[in-house]
Length: 459
Image (cartoon, rainbow, N blue to C red; front, top):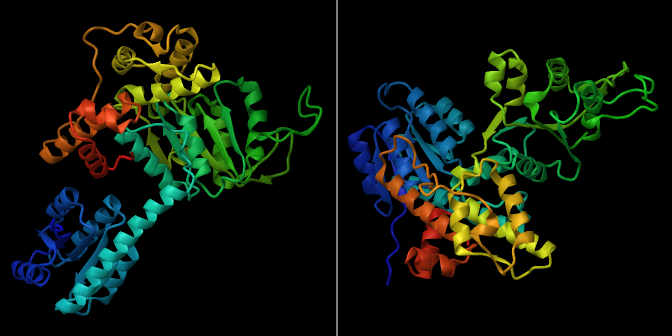
């Protein structure tokens, strides 16, 4: 019979005597002790406890609560679901209420009754478990707003979580990344996950429209405003009212229009070209570019005040060459799609083609890979796409670039990263087939399922 491992309870307390009392009182848990902010954060990253008890007075200034409040904010920033129970001194009601306002689960005054605190800790664990189960059930039954995004790379999964967090807000989001990395897919996913999903998603490429036409495209124009303006026409901003507007390649927006866009972001009203009436607009703005906006600011080609308006939330999208396992996974998906379009349902990727795809750096990112696979499915003769069908030259010494965290000496994290990279690579090569992936890794299928569960990967 397997004995369940005690759950981790992090105790942040600098008084050795009180540390011993708390550990003795709660021996049913795996009590982990930290006596200052840095050690508490290290234990949090290592053990990921669901519940934390903490004193507000911590070194180096135990008579002040500044370190305690810093730690509370950092814990909730790293692990928002963690239940933090604050232990305060007598007559410290104001700080206790401040801690609750910042997101603490509960507070107790010292000296505390172990039996009462034990009930609160048990209730905190139960609430944490209910929230995790509720999130799991919601993910199973609700449509995935990012369903068009195919990835297993940890960096991209983190981006998905960020998008899910900000979707319900109205903050302006700036997507940065090389051409072809999937910025528009992420923008549409952000729109679909937001309360604006029932309204329009409108995208405009600022680099694709001549400067003399871009203003009228964005802001609309009145009848007779210029030659050929036969009727009053709304612009993209007005068309997206109550929905989402994506400004692609925002780095190419002319300076004259940057000032007008900044005014709109500040006042949320527009005027048609040739018009005088102010039109109020309620729209969520998402911007995207492959350019370095900070470099453009130094060159005087982009307004700094506009940048800070656009980058309320900034998301950097990694190139395909840095997304371990994604190239093969995407290639399988593209083969299925294009084979269906070409009525070649039995077409599959050969092993040699997969190796070539994994080694190629894909400077054009996902868009280049998609075009390559589309061409290969049209030109292939057999039922398996070969390296020759893929049609790319790969140097003998080329290898997949796997970033293991620069400067990291955390052995546990490095081992976990190595396991994750191996698993996502195998799942990518096998097109998500767990049996084949387990064979590639040399482990049993239950072992692979356990690994996937521990690493947070979906089957």
